[in-house]
Image (cartoon, rainbow, N blue to C red; front, side, top):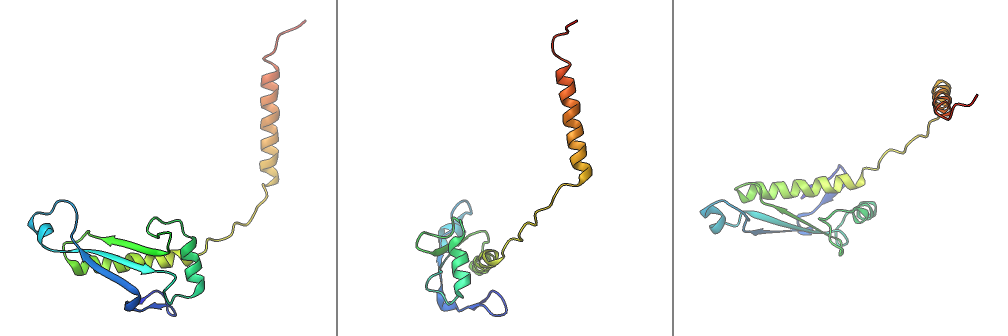
Length: 137
């Protein structure tokens, strides 16, 4: 059971976890033991609230397939259990990050003094450029 918030809980039956062999260097341990974890979680078939599902499907994340399945591979640790915990932690963080809405920007106006400074600098620059022309008597 994976607890996302006080109200949202994902049962273990909705998360598909399989052990696979890790990639890369690691000696005999890598060749013998399946320590990496491959986690699959179907967003559409889950018991998540509709708001969570919509936000997750809107995300532009490479871990979410076009079919709406979250695929996470964890192979950083040498033990299978630690990799399992890491994969579940990543899934939890992904779901939490999807439902946090960014704060809306409040439009502000420039201050009067900043407007005056801007116009003064434009006038000054214009004078400098106009003085660069040909000198006529």
